[in-house]
Image (cartoon, rainbow, N blue to C red):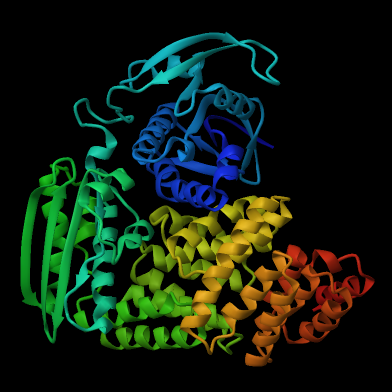
Length: 616
Protein backbone atom coordinates (compact mmCIF):
# COMPACT_ATOMS: atom_id res chain seq x y z
CA UNK A 1 0.00 0.00 0.00
CA UNK A 2 1.46 3.35 -1.10
CA UNK A 3 1.00 6.54 0.92
CA UNK A 4 2.02 10.06 -0.07
CA UNK A 5 1.48 13.73 0.68
CA UNK A 6 -0.40 15.43 -2.10
CA UNK A 7 -2.61 18.42 -2.85
CA UNK A 8 -6.21 17.39 -3.49
CA UNK A 9 -8.80 19.40 -5.43
CA UNK A 10 -12.47 18.41 -5.09
CA UNK A 11 -15.11 20.13 -7.23
CA UNK A 12 -18.88 19.76 -7.49
CA UNK A 13 -21.76 21.47 -9.33
CA UNK A 14 -23.99 23.70 -7.19
CA UNK A 15 -27.67 22.73 -7.28
CA UNK A 16 -27.17 19.92 -9.78
CA UNK A 17 -30.52 18.23 -9.09
CA UNK A 18 -32.38 21.51 -9.56
CA UNK A 19 -30.57 22.21 -12.83
CA UNK A 20 -31.41 18.71 -14.06
CA UNK A 21 -35.05 19.35 -13.24
CA UNK A 22 -35.03 22.56 -15.29
CA UNK A 23 -33.23 21.13 -18.35
CA UNK A 24 -31.80 17.62 -18.13
CA UNK A 25 -30.24 17.39 -21.59
CA UNK A 26 -28.91 20.95 -21.56
CA UNK A 27 -27.39 20.57 -18.09
CA UNK A 28 -25.64 17.30 -18.95
CA UNK A 29 -24.27 18.77 -22.17
CA UNK A 30 -23.05 21.92 -20.40
CA UNK A 31 -21.37 19.99 -17.56
CA UNK A 32 -19.56 17.74 -20.03
CA UNK A 33 -18.52 20.74 -22.11
CA UNK A 34 -17.08 22.54 -19.07
CA UNK A 35 -15.20 19.39 -18.05
CA UNK A 36 -13.60 18.83 -21.46
CA UNK A 37 -12.96 22.46 -22.41
CA UNK A 38 -12.06 24.12 -19.09
CA UNK A 39 -11.55 21.79 -16.13
CA UNK A 40 -9.55 19.05 -17.85
CA UNK A 41 -7.15 21.42 -19.68
CA UNK A 42 -6.68 23.53 -16.51
CA UNK A 43 -5.70 20.45 -14.49
CA UNK A 44 -3.20 19.37 -17.16
CA UNK A 45 -1.83 22.91 -17.50
CA UNK A 46 -1.09 23.09 -13.76
CA UNK A 47 0.63 19.68 -13.77
CA UNK A 48 -2.23 17.93 -12.04
CA UNK A 49 -3.82 14.53 -12.53
CA UNK A 50 -7.53 13.89 -12.89
CA UNK A 51 -8.12 11.02 -10.46
CA UNK A 52 -11.78 10.38 -11.19
CA UNK A 53 -15.14 11.88 -11.99
CA UNK A 54 -17.73 11.74 -9.22
CA UNK A 55 -21.19 12.16 -10.72
CA UNK A 56 -21.36 15.90 -11.36
CA UNK A 57 -17.98 16.54 -9.69
CA UNK A 58 -14.37 15.47 -9.91
CA UNK A 59 -11.27 14.74 -7.85
CA UNK A 60 -7.75 15.78 -8.93
CA UNK A 61 -4.33 15.71 -7.31
CA UNK A 62 -1.25 17.91 -7.62
CA UNK A 63 2.31 17.56 -6.39
CA UNK A 64 2.27 21.28 -5.56
CA UNK A 65 -0.39 22.94 -3.41
CA UNK A 66 0.42 26.22 -5.19
CA UNK A 67 -0.47 24.64 -8.52
CA UNK A 68 -3.65 23.15 -7.05
CA UNK A 69 -4.92 26.52 -5.81
CA UNK A 70 -3.84 28.30 -9.01
CA UNK A 71 -5.77 25.68 -10.98
CA UNK A 72 -8.85 26.13 -8.77
CA UNK A 73 -8.74 29.89 -9.32
CA UNK A 74 -8.38 29.51 -13.09
CA UNK A 75 -11.35 27.16 -13.15
CA UNK A 76 -13.58 29.49 -11.14
CA UNK A 77 -12.57 32.50 -13.21
CA UNK A 78 -13.27 30.54 -16.37
CA UNK A 79 -16.67 29.39 -15.08
CA UNK A 80 -17.59 32.97 -14.22
CA UNK A 81 -16.72 34.11 -17.74
CA UNK A 82 -18.69 31.26 -19.26
CA UNK A 83 -21.75 32.21 -17.18
CA UNK A 84 -21.93 35.73 -18.62
CA UNK A 85 -25.21 36.14 -20.44
CA UNK A 86 -26.62 32.83 -19.13
CA UNK A 87 -29.94 33.02 -17.28
CA UNK A 88 -29.42 32.63 -13.54
CA UNK A 89 -31.68 29.57 -13.24
CA UNK A 90 -29.55 27.78 -15.89
CA UNK A 91 -26.16 29.03 -14.74
CA UNK A 92 -23.68 26.32 -13.75
CA UNK A 93 -21.47 27.14 -10.79
CA UNK A 94 -18.90 25.06 -8.97
CA UNK A 95 -17.79 24.74 -5.38
CA UNK A 96 -14.14 23.77 -4.94
CA UNK A 97 -12.23 22.55 -1.92
CA UNK A 98 -8.43 22.24 -1.86
CA UNK A 99 -6.53 20.37 0.83
CA UNK A 100 -2.95 19.21 1.35
CA UNK A 101 -2.62 15.95 3.20
CA UNK A 102 -1.78 12.27 3.40
CA UNK A 103 -3.50 9.90 0.98
CA UNK A 104 -3.51 6.17 0.24
CA UNK A 105 -2.89 5.27 -3.40
CA UNK A 106 -4.40 2.13 -4.90
CA UNK A 107 -4.91 1.31 -8.61
CA UNK A 108 -4.61 4.96 -9.54
CA UNK A 109 -7.28 6.07 -7.05
CA UNK A 110 -6.64 8.01 -3.82
CA UNK A 111 -8.31 7.57 -0.43
CA UNK A 112 -7.93 8.69 3.15
CA UNK A 113 -8.39 11.68 5.44
CA UNK A 114 -6.73 14.08 2.98
CA UNK A 115 -9.37 13.28 0.36
CA UNK A 116 -12.24 13.37 2.86
CA UNK A 117 -11.29 16.82 4.10
CA UNK A 118 -11.03 18.20 0.55
CA UNK A 119 -14.56 16.93 -0.13
CA UNK A 120 -15.90 18.51 3.08
CA UNK A 121 -14.22 21.82 2.28
CA UNK A 122 -15.82 21.76 -1.16
CA UNK A 123 -19.22 21.29 0.49
CA UNK A 124 -18.85 24.48 2.58
CA UNK A 125 -17.36 26.63 -0.19
CA UNK A 126 -19.48 29.42 -1.63
CA UNK A 127 -21.02 28.94 -5.09
CA UNK A 128 -18.25 29.97 -7.48
CA UNK A 129 -15.78 29.94 -4.60
CA UNK A 130 -12.87 27.97 -3.14
CA UNK A 131 -12.43 26.80 0.45
CA UNK A 132 -9.09 25.78 1.97
CA UNK A 133 -7.76 24.89 5.45
CA UNK A 134 -5.09 26.72 7.46
CA UNK A 135 -2.33 24.41 6.18
CA UNK A 136 -2.98 25.47 2.58
CA UNK A 137 -2.96 29.18 3.51
CA UNK A 138 0.38 28.71 5.24
CA UNK A 139 1.94 27.00 2.23
CA UNK A 140 0.63 29.52 -0.29
CA UNK A 141 1.84 32.51 1.70
CA UNK A 142 2.47 35.36 -0.76
CA UNK A 143 3.34 33.14 -3.70
CA UNK A 144 -0.02 33.81 -5.36
CA UNK A 145 -1.73 37.18 -5.55
CA UNK A 146 -4.71 36.06 -3.46
CA UNK A 147 -6.51 36.98 -0.27
CA UNK A 148 -7.71 34.46 2.29
CA UNK A 149 -10.83 35.33 4.25
CA UNK A 150 -11.00 33.61 7.64
CA UNK A 151 -14.36 31.84 7.99
CA UNK A 152 -13.58 30.59 11.49
CA UNK A 153 -13.44 27.17 13.08
CA UNK A 154 -16.04 24.87 11.53
CA UNK A 155 -17.38 21.41 12.29
CA UNK A 156 -17.29 19.43 9.04
CA UNK A 157 -19.21 16.24 8.40
CA UNK A 158 -17.28 13.05 9.33
CA UNK A 159 -14.21 15.12 10.36
CA UNK A 160 -13.54 14.53 14.06
CA UNK A 161 -11.79 17.84 14.82
CA UNK A 162 -12.74 21.45 14.13
CA UNK A 163 -11.16 22.91 10.97
CA UNK A 164 -10.30 26.57 10.43
CA UNK A 165 -11.70 27.31 6.96
CA UNK A 166 -10.59 30.10 4.64
CA UNK A 167 -12.38 31.40 1.54
CA UNK A 168 -10.01 32.21 -1.32
CA UNK A 169 -10.53 35.69 -2.74
CA UNK A 170 -9.05 36.10 -6.21
CA UNK A 171 -9.77 39.68 -7.20
CA UNK A 172 -6.17 40.21 -8.36
CA UNK A 173 -4.14 38.31 -10.97
CA UNK A 174 -2.91 34.79 -10.29
CA UNK A 175 0.75 33.89 -10.58
CA UNK A 176 1.50 30.20 -10.95
CA UNK A 177 4.61 28.80 -9.30
CA UNK A 178 7.68 30.05 -11.06
CA UNK A 179 5.88 32.84 -12.92
CA UNK A 180 7.57 36.23 -12.50
CA UNK A 181 5.57 39.12 -11.13
CA UNK A 182 3.91 41.18 -13.81
CA UNK A 183 3.70 38.30 -16.28
CA UNK A 184 -0.09 38.62 -16.28
CA UNK A 185 -2.88 36.18 -15.49
CA UNK A 186 -2.72 32.87 -17.38
CA UNK A 187 -5.53 33.61 -19.82
CA UNK A 188 -3.75 36.77 -21.06
CA UNK A 189 -1.72 34.45 -23.30
CA UNK A 190 -4.60 32.27 -24.41
CA UNK A 191 -5.58 31.79 -28.03
CA UNK A 192 -8.04 29.91 -30.20
CA UNK A 193 -7.18 29.00 -33.80
CA UNK A 194 -10.47 29.01 -35.69
CA UNK A 195 -10.79 26.52 -38.59
CA UNK A 196 -9.21 28.09 -41.66
CA UNK A 197 -11.71 28.63 -44.45
CA UNK A 198 -11.30 26.57 -47.63
CA UNK A 199 -11.29 29.12 -50.45
CA UNK A 200 -10.36 26.65 -53.20
CA UNK A 201 -13.89 26.33 -54.52
CA UNK A 202 -13.55 22.55 -54.20
CA UNK A 203 -15.10 20.82 -51.16
CA UNK A 204 -12.66 17.95 -51.64
CA UNK A 205 -9.87 20.34 -50.58
CA UNK A 206 -11.44 20.65 -47.13
CA UNK A 207 -8.97 18.08 -45.80
CA UNK A 208 -6.13 20.51 -46.53
CA UNK A 209 -7.56 23.56 -44.75
CA UNK A 210 -8.61 21.41 -41.78
CA UNK A 211 -5.21 19.73 -41.69
CA UNK A 212 -3.39 23.05 -41.77
CA UNK A 213 -5.53 24.31 -38.88
CA UNK A 214 -4.81 21.21 -36.80
CA UNK A 215 -1.08 21.44 -37.41
CA UNK A 216 -0.96 25.12 -36.42
CA UNK A 217 -2.83 24.19 -33.21
CA UNK A 218 -0.32 21.39 -32.61
CA UNK A 219 2.65 23.74 -33.12
CA UNK A 220 1.26 26.40 -30.80
CA UNK A 221 0.43 23.78 -28.17
CA UNK A 222 4.13 22.99 -27.90
CA UNK A 223 4.75 26.46 -26.44
CA UNK A 224 4.66 26.33 -22.63
CA UNK A 225 3.85 30.05 -22.28
CA UNK A 226 0.70 29.84 -24.39
CA UNK A 227 -2.70 28.33 -23.57
CA UNK A 228 -4.22 26.97 -26.79
CA UNK A 229 -7.84 25.88 -27.20
CA UNK A 230 -7.84 22.19 -28.20
CA UNK A 231 -8.86 20.99 -31.64
CA UNK A 232 -12.17 19.43 -30.55
CA UNK A 233 -13.42 22.76 -29.20
CA UNK A 234 -12.04 24.77 -32.10
CA UNK A 235 -13.84 22.74 -34.74
CA UNK A 236 -17.25 23.24 -33.12
CA UNK A 237 -17.01 26.74 -34.63
CA UNK A 238 -16.49 25.48 -38.17
CA UNK A 239 -19.13 26.99 -40.44
CA UNK A 240 -20.59 29.09 -37.62
CA UNK A 241 -20.95 32.84 -37.97
CA UNK A 242 -20.15 34.18 -34.52
CA UNK A 243 -18.54 37.46 -33.50
CA UNK A 244 -14.96 37.40 -32.25
CA UNK A 245 -15.92 38.79 -28.85
CA UNK A 246 -18.59 36.14 -28.38
CA UNK A 247 -16.19 33.32 -29.29
CA UNK A 248 -13.55 34.67 -26.93
CA UNK A 249 -16.03 34.92 -24.06
CA UNK A 250 -17.36 31.41 -24.67
CA UNK A 251 -13.84 29.95 -24.71
CA UNK A 252 -12.27 32.24 -22.09
CA UNK A 253 -9.46 33.30 -24.44
CA UNK A 254 -7.81 36.66 -25.13
CA UNK A 255 -6.67 36.17 -28.74
CA UNK A 256 -8.21 34.71 -31.88
CA UNK A 257 -6.35 33.51 -34.99
CA UNK A 258 -8.41 33.13 -38.15
CA UNK A 259 -7.53 32.65 -41.78
CA UNK A 260 -8.21 31.12 -45.15
CA UNK A 261 -6.50 28.72 -47.55
CA UNK A 262 -6.59 28.56 -51.33
CA UNK A 263 -4.76 25.58 -52.81
CA UNK A 264 -4.40 25.43 -56.58
CA UNK A 265 -2.04 23.02 -58.25
CA UNK A 266 1.45 23.59 -56.87
CA UNK A 267 0.60 26.97 -55.37
CA UNK A 268 -0.99 27.88 -52.05
CA UNK A 269 -2.29 31.20 -50.75
CA UNK A 270 -2.79 31.49 -46.99
CA UNK A 271 -4.15 34.55 -45.24
CA UNK A 272 -4.02 34.81 -41.45
CA UNK A 273 -4.81 37.45 -38.86
CA UNK A 274 -4.53 37.63 -35.09
CA UNK A 275 -7.14 39.62 -33.16
CA UNK A 276 -7.17 40.89 -29.58
CA UNK A 277 -10.68 39.97 -28.43
CA UNK A 278 -10.65 42.62 -25.69
CA UNK A 279 -10.98 45.42 -28.23
CA UNK A 280 -11.10 43.49 -31.55
CA UNK A 281 -7.89 45.17 -32.70
CA UNK A 282 -5.97 43.39 -35.46
CA UNK A 283 -2.56 42.83 -33.91
CA UNK A 284 -1.03 41.11 -36.91
CA UNK A 285 -2.06 40.01 -40.41
CA UNK A 286 -0.17 38.55 -43.33
CA UNK A 287 -0.71 36.79 -46.64
CA UNK A 288 1.52 34.04 -47.96
CA UNK A 289 1.42 33.41 -51.72
CA UNK A 290 3.94 30.63 -52.15
CA UNK A 291 4.79 27.32 -53.71
CA UNK A 292 3.12 24.41 -51.95
CA UNK A 293 6.57 23.20 -50.93
CA UNK A 294 6.75 26.17 -48.53
CA UNK A 295 3.77 24.98 -46.46
CA UNK A 296 5.85 24.06 -43.40
CA UNK A 297 7.79 27.32 -43.55
CA UNK A 298 4.47 29.19 -43.58
CA UNK A 299 3.28 27.30 -40.49
CA UNK A 300 6.56 28.18 -38.72
CA UNK A 301 6.23 31.85 -39.67
CA UNK A 302 2.66 32.02 -38.35
CA UNK A 303 3.72 30.43 -35.04
CA UNK A 304 6.70 32.79 -34.68
CA UNK A 305 4.53 35.81 -35.54
CA UNK A 306 2.13 34.94 -32.72
CA UNK A 307 4.99 34.35 -30.30
CA UNK A 308 6.49 37.69 -31.26
CA UNK A 309 3.23 39.57 -30.75
CA UNK A 310 2.78 38.07 -27.29
CA UNK A 311 6.45 38.55 -26.38
CA UNK A 312 6.86 34.91 -25.37
CA UNK A 313 10.41 33.72 -24.79
CA UNK A 314 10.75 30.34 -26.48
CA UNK A 315 12.92 27.62 -25.00
CA UNK A 316 15.45 25.98 -27.33
CA UNK A 317 13.49 22.71 -27.32
CA UNK A 318 10.29 24.59 -28.21
CA UNK A 319 12.01 26.25 -31.17
CA UNK A 320 13.20 22.85 -32.37
CA UNK A 321 9.75 21.32 -31.94
CA UNK A 322 8.07 24.08 -33.95
CA UNK A 323 10.65 24.20 -36.72
CA UNK A 324 11.08 20.43 -37.18
CA UNK A 325 9.42 19.46 -40.45
CA UNK A 326 7.44 16.18 -40.29
CA UNK A 327 8.46 15.47 -43.89
CA UNK A 328 10.40 17.20 -46.64
CA UNK A 329 7.97 15.97 -49.28
CA UNK A 330 4.88 18.14 -49.49
CA UNK A 331 3.03 15.62 -51.65
CA UNK A 332 3.54 13.04 -48.90
CA UNK A 333 2.10 15.57 -46.45
CA UNK A 334 -1.05 16.05 -48.55
CA UNK A 335 -1.55 12.28 -48.74
CA UNK A 336 -1.08 12.07 -44.97
CA UNK A 337 -3.74 14.76 -44.40
CA UNK A 338 -6.17 12.89 -46.66
CA UNK A 339 -5.48 9.68 -44.76
CA UNK A 340 -5.99 11.33 -41.38
CA UNK A 341 -9.35 12.68 -42.50
CA UNK A 342 -10.53 9.27 -43.74
CA UNK A 343 -9.22 7.32 -40.73
CA UNK A 344 -11.37 9.23 -38.25
CA UNK A 345 -14.59 8.02 -39.89
CA UNK A 346 -14.04 4.56 -38.30
CA UNK A 347 -15.75 2.74 -41.20
CA UNK A 348 -14.08 -0.27 -42.80
CA UNK A 349 -13.99 1.26 -46.27
CA UNK A 350 -12.55 4.57 -45.09
CA UNK A 351 -10.00 2.87 -42.85
CA UNK A 352 -8.83 0.89 -45.88
CA UNK A 353 -8.74 4.07 -47.96
CA UNK A 354 -6.84 5.91 -45.21
CA UNK A 355 -4.30 3.10 -45.14
CA UNK A 356 -3.70 3.52 -48.88
CA UNK A 357 -3.20 7.26 -48.37
CA UNK A 358 -0.65 6.66 -45.61
CA UNK A 359 1.12 4.01 -47.72
CA UNK A 360 1.37 6.46 -50.60
CA UNK A 361 2.86 9.04 -48.22
CA UNK A 362 5.54 6.51 -47.22
CA UNK A 363 6.29 5.73 -50.87
CA UNK A 364 7.02 9.42 -51.33
CA UNK A 365 8.95 9.72 -48.04
CA UNK A 366 10.14 6.43 -46.50
CA UNK A 367 11.09 8.31 -43.29
CA UNK A 368 7.65 9.82 -42.58
CA UNK A 369 6.96 8.77 -38.95
CA UNK A 370 3.38 10.05 -38.78
CA UNK A 371 2.42 8.00 -41.84
CA UNK A 372 3.79 4.81 -40.28
CA UNK A 373 1.81 5.54 -37.11
CA UNK A 374 -1.28 6.09 -39.26
CA UNK A 375 -0.87 2.71 -40.96
CA UNK A 376 -0.41 0.97 -37.60
CA UNK A 377 -3.59 2.59 -36.26
CA UNK A 378 -5.62 1.64 -39.34
CA UNK A 379 -4.33 -1.93 -39.26
CA UNK A 380 -5.10 -2.28 -35.56
CA UNK A 381 -8.66 -0.99 -36.11
CA UNK A 382 -9.21 -3.26 -39.11
CA UNK A 383 -7.74 -6.20 -37.19
CA UNK A 384 -9.86 -5.82 -34.06
CA UNK A 385 -13.11 -4.29 -35.36
CA UNK A 386 -13.40 -5.93 -38.75
CA UNK A 387 -11.43 -9.17 -38.24
CA UNK A 388 -9.06 -8.32 -41.09
CA UNK A 389 -6.32 -10.90 -41.55
CA UNK A 390 -3.45 -8.61 -40.64
CA UNK A 391 -0.66 -10.25 -38.62
CA UNK A 392 -0.26 -8.47 -35.31
CA UNK A 393 3.51 -8.79 -35.64
CA UNK A 394 3.42 -6.58 -38.74
CA UNK A 395 1.42 -3.95 -36.84
CA UNK A 396 3.99 -4.06 -34.04
CA UNK A 397 6.82 -3.62 -36.54
CA UNK A 398 5.09 -0.67 -38.22
CA UNK A 399 4.52 1.08 -34.89
CA UNK A 400 8.14 0.40 -33.88
CA UNK A 401 9.31 1.97 -37.15
CA UNK A 402 7.32 5.14 -36.37
CA UNK A 403 8.93 5.36 -32.93
CA UNK A 404 12.41 4.82 -34.32
CA UNK A 405 11.92 7.68 -36.77
CA UNK A 406 10.44 10.07 -34.16
CA UNK A 407 10.75 9.04 -30.47
CA UNK A 408 8.81 12.16 -29.37
CA UNK A 409 5.80 11.64 -31.64
CA UNK A 410 2.62 11.13 -29.59
CA UNK A 411 0.93 9.28 -32.47
CA UNK A 412 3.83 6.82 -32.61
CA UNK A 413 3.62 6.03 -28.89
CA UNK A 414 -0.17 5.60 -29.19
CA UNK A 415 0.23 3.30 -32.21
CA UNK A 416 2.74 1.15 -30.32
CA UNK A 417 0.46 1.01 -27.26
CA UNK A 418 -2.56 0.00 -29.34
CA UNK A 419 -0.63 -2.77 -31.11
CA UNK A 420 0.70 -4.16 -27.82
CA UNK A 421 -2.75 -3.96 -26.26
CA UNK A 422 -4.31 -5.95 -29.10
CA UNK A 423 -1.52 -8.48 -28.73
CA UNK A 424 -2.46 -9.06 -25.08
CA UNK A 425 0.66 -7.33 -23.75
CA UNK A 426 -1.08 -4.72 -21.63
CA UNK A 427 1.69 -4.22 -19.08
CA UNK A 428 4.02 -3.27 -21.94
CA UNK A 429 1.33 -1.11 -23.57
CA UNK A 430 0.59 1.08 -20.53
CA UNK A 431 3.86 3.10 -20.53
CA UNK A 432 3.33 3.90 -24.22
CA UNK A 433 -0.24 5.04 -23.56
CA UNK A 434 0.99 7.22 -20.70
CA UNK A 435 3.75 8.74 -22.82
CA UNK A 436 1.36 9.45 -25.71
CA UNK A 437 -1.09 11.19 -23.37
CA UNK A 438 1.71 13.18 -21.74
CA UNK A 439 2.93 14.37 -25.15
CA UNK A 440 -0.58 15.18 -26.39
CA UNK A 441 -3.49 14.91 -23.90
CA UNK A 442 -5.92 15.65 -26.75
CA UNK A 443 -4.80 12.83 -29.05
CA UNK A 444 -8.00 10.96 -29.89
CA UNK A 445 -6.40 7.60 -30.61
CA UNK A 446 -4.57 7.52 -27.26
CA UNK A 447 -7.67 8.43 -25.23
CA UNK A 448 -10.01 6.11 -27.16
CA UNK A 449 -7.86 2.99 -27.02
CA UNK A 450 -6.60 3.55 -23.46
CA UNK A 451 -10.25 3.74 -22.41
CA UNK A 452 -10.84 0.39 -24.13
CA UNK A 453 -7.89 -1.08 -22.28
CA UNK A 454 -9.27 0.13 -18.92
CA UNK A 455 -12.83 -1.01 -19.71
CA UNK A 456 -11.66 -4.49 -20.68
CA UNK A 457 -9.84 -4.74 -17.33
CA UNK A 458 -12.97 -3.67 -15.43
CA UNK A 459 -11.58 -0.27 -14.37
CA UNK A 460 -14.78 1.55 -15.26
CA UNK A 461 -14.18 4.76 -13.27
CA UNK A 462 -10.91 5.37 -15.11
CA UNK A 463 -12.33 4.25 -18.46
CA UNK A 464 -15.10 6.84 -18.18
CA UNK A 465 -12.55 9.66 -17.94
CA UNK A 466 -10.87 8.72 -21.21
CA UNK A 467 -14.04 7.72 -23.05
CA UNK A 468 -15.54 11.11 -22.17
CA UNK A 469 -12.45 12.79 -23.53
CA UNK A 470 -12.46 10.78 -26.77
CA UNK A 471 -16.20 11.43 -27.21
CA UNK A 472 -15.56 15.16 -26.84
CA UNK A 473 -12.56 15.14 -29.20
CA UNK A 474 -14.59 13.86 -32.19
CA UNK A 475 -18.32 14.24 -32.41
CA UNK A 476 -18.44 11.49 -35.08
CA UNK A 477 -17.25 8.95 -32.49
CA UNK A 478 -20.36 6.89 -31.68
CA UNK A 479 -18.47 4.04 -30.01
CA UNK A 480 -17.30 5.96 -26.93
CA UNK A 481 -20.76 7.15 -25.82
CA UNK A 482 -22.22 3.65 -26.09
CA UNK A 483 -19.36 2.12 -24.09
CA UNK A 484 -19.76 4.98 -21.60
CA UNK A 485 -23.37 3.87 -21.14
CA UNK A 486 -22.16 0.34 -20.35
CA UNK A 487 -19.48 1.59 -17.94
CA UNK A 488 -21.99 3.81 -16.12
CA UNK A 489 -24.37 0.89 -15.75
CA UNK A 490 -21.56 -1.20 -14.22
CA UNK A 491 -21.12 1.55 -11.62
CA UNK A 492 -24.85 1.96 -10.98
CA UNK A 493 -24.97 5.43 -12.55
CA UNK A 494 -28.24 4.94 -14.35
CA UNK A 495 -28.89 8.60 -15.09
CA UNK A 496 -25.53 8.97 -16.82
CA UNK A 497 -26.06 5.66 -18.58
CA UNK A 498 -29.26 7.00 -20.14
CA UNK A 499 -27.59 10.25 -21.20
CA UNK A 500 -24.72 8.47 -22.98
CA UNK A 501 -27.00 5.91 -24.63
CA UNK A 502 -29.07 8.74 -26.11
CA UNK A 503 -25.94 10.51 -27.30
CA UNK A 504 -24.59 7.28 -28.82
CA UNK A 505 -27.81 6.66 -30.73
CA UNK A 506 -27.79 10.17 -32.18
CA UNK A 507 -24.21 9.80 -33.38
CA UNK A 508 -24.67 6.24 -34.67
CA UNK A 509 -27.80 7.13 -36.60
CA UNK A 510 -26.01 10.09 -38.17
CA UNK A 511 -23.09 7.83 -39.14
CA UNK A 512 -25.48 5.26 -40.59
CA UNK A 513 -27.15 7.90 -42.75
CA UNK A 514 -23.77 9.08 -44.03
CA UNK A 515 -22.51 5.52 -44.71
CA UNK A 516 -25.61 3.36 -45.32
CA UNK A 517 -23.56 0.31 -46.28
CA UNK A 518 -21.69 0.12 -42.97
CA UNK A 519 -23.15 -2.18 -40.32
CA UNK A 520 -21.00 -0.83 -37.43
CA UNK A 521 -23.17 2.16 -36.41
CA UNK A 522 -26.28 0.01 -36.87
CA UNK A 523 -25.32 -2.69 -34.38
CA UNK A 524 -23.93 -0.06 -31.98
CA UNK A 525 -27.24 1.83 -32.11
CA UNK A 526 -29.07 -1.45 -31.45
CA UNK A 527 -27.03 -1.92 -28.28
CA UNK A 528 -27.77 1.62 -27.13
CA UNK A 529 -31.50 1.09 -27.70
CA UNK A 530 -31.25 -2.06 -25.58
CA UNK A 531 -29.52 0.00 -22.86
CA UNK A 532 -32.56 2.30 -22.88
CA UNK A 533 -34.96 -0.65 -22.71
CA UNK A 534 -36.44 0.08 -26.16
CA UNK A 535 -36.93 -3.55 -27.14
CA UNK A 536 -38.59 -3.02 -30.52
CA UNK A 537 -35.96 -0.65 -31.86
CA UNK A 538 -33.09 -2.70 -30.43
CA UNK A 539 -34.30 -5.89 -32.15
CA UNK A 540 -35.10 -4.05 -35.38
CA UNK A 541 -31.64 -2.47 -35.58
CA UNK A 542 -29.70 -5.63 -34.67
CA UNK A 543 -31.69 -7.66 -37.21
CA UNK A 544 -30.81 -5.08 -39.83
CA UNK A 545 -27.12 -5.15 -38.88
CA UNK A 546 -26.97 -8.97 -39.09
CA UNK A 547 -28.65 -8.87 -42.50
CA UNK A 548 -26.06 -6.37 -43.69
CA UNK A 549 -23.03 -8.26 -42.40
CA UNK A 550 -23.93 -11.72 -41.04
CA UNK A 551 -20.32 -12.95 -40.77
CA UNK A 552 -18.87 -9.90 -38.99
CA UNK A 553 -17.67 -11.02 -35.55
CA UNK A 554 -18.33 -7.70 -33.83
CA UNK A 555 -21.85 -7.45 -35.25
CA UNK A 556 -22.52 -10.95 -33.95
CA UNK A 557 -21.04 -10.14 -30.53
CA UNK A 558 -23.22 -7.05 -30.20
CA UNK A 559 -26.22 -9.22 -31.15
CA UNK A 560 -25.35 -11.37 -28.12
CA UNK A 561 -25.12 -8.23 -25.98
CA UNK A 562 -28.45 -6.85 -27.23
CA UNK A 563 -30.31 -10.03 -26.32
CA UNK A 564 -28.47 -10.32 -23.00
CA UNK A 565 -29.34 -6.74 -22.00
CA UNK A 566 -32.98 -7.33 -23.00
CA UNK A 567 -33.07 -10.46 -20.82
CA UNK A 568 -33.35 -12.99 -23.68
CA UNK A 569 -31.01 -15.38 -21.89
CA UNK A 570 -31.55 -18.50 -24.02
CA UNK A 571 -31.12 -16.69 -27.32
CA UNK A 572 -28.09 -14.75 -26.07
CA UNK A 573 -26.40 -18.00 -24.93
CA UNK A 574 -27.32 -19.65 -28.25
CA UNK A 575 -25.65 -16.86 -30.21
CA UNK A 576 -22.64 -16.77 -27.89
CA UNK A 577 -22.02 -20.51 -28.26
CA UNK A 578 -21.76 -20.07 -32.02
CA UNK A 579 -19.63 -16.96 -31.75
CA UNK A 580 -16.86 -18.21 -29.45
CA UNK A 581 -15.10 -20.46 -32.02
CA UNK A 582 -14.77 -17.51 -34.42
CA UNK A 583 -13.56 -14.92 -31.90
CA UNK A 584 -10.03 -13.64 -31.46
CA UNK A 585 -8.31 -13.79 -28.08
CA UNK A 586 -8.78 -10.03 -27.77
CA UNK A 587 -12.53 -10.31 -28.31
CA UNK A 588 -12.79 -13.23 -25.89
CA UNK A 589 -11.12 -11.05 -23.28
CA UNK A 590 -14.13 -8.71 -23.30
CA UNK A 591 -16.41 -11.41 -21.90
CA UNK A 592 -14.93 -11.15 -18.41
CA UNK A 593 -15.97 -7.58 -17.51
CA UNK A 594 -18.46 -6.47 -20.17
CA UNK A 595 -21.56 -5.53 -18.17
CA UNK A 596 -23.73 -6.10 -21.25
CA UNK A 597 -23.42 -9.83 -20.44
CA UNK A 598 -24.39 -9.51 -16.77
CA UNK A 599 -27.87 -10.98 -17.29
CA UNK A 600 -26.44 -14.28 -18.55
CA UNK A 601 -23.47 -14.70 -16.20
CA UNK A 602 -25.43 -16.76 -13.68
CA UNK A 603 -26.42 -19.29 -16.35
CA UNK A 604 -24.40 -22.54 -16.11
CA UNK A 605 -23.96 -22.53 -19.89
CA UNK A 606 -22.07 -19.25 -19.62
CA UNK A 607 -19.70 -20.76 -17.04
CA UNK A 608 -19.13 -23.66 -19.40
CA UNK A 609 -18.23 -21.29 -22.22
CA UNK A 610 -15.85 -19.36 -19.99
CA UNK A 611 -14.14 -22.62 -19.05
CA UNK A 612 -13.68 -23.42 -22.74
CA UNK A 613 -12.25 -19.95 -23.33
CA UNK A 614 -9.83 -20.34 -20.41
CA UNK A 615 -8.41 -23.46 -22.03
CA UNK A 616 -7.78 -21.75 -25.38
